[in-house]
Image (tube, rainbow, N blue to C red; front, top):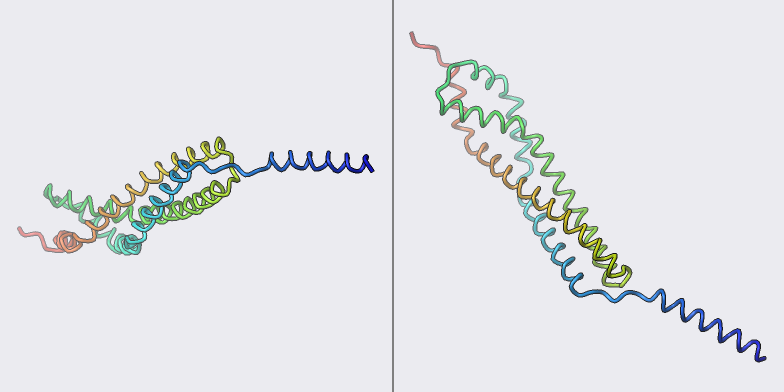
Length: 186
């Protein structure tokens, strides 16, 4: 009987030690706060990109396809400095519209996947599934990736502003392009 009690006591002690070794880590409030901040700024950036009219890139690309030959013909004419600048800027922006639209969508998708990763990290931290040292490394990597992604968001916004300006000067460009159809006066 004593042998059975000793075995049971030793087993209980061993299981207790294992359970203590597997106890969840206490979440660090500063780490949770950092991840919460990353989640908030990621959500705000995604909301901003979703507010922009991504279809505008497609419309400008269609305009490029329809007018690229007219632009090239007009570039063969003698142009004054202002007309050349306006037409050149418009042509370059129209030509790059498809790529700018693809970049916009890629950055939005990157924000979505980053948001999912951050939410999973936050959940793991809150439940103590990640040791604080490991969490520090993961948060550092996420912060670095987030900074690079934030730069890309700013670039998408700047490109969108340029696309908006190109859209707004359509009438001026059409007028400059139509000047090539006018007969040359002797």
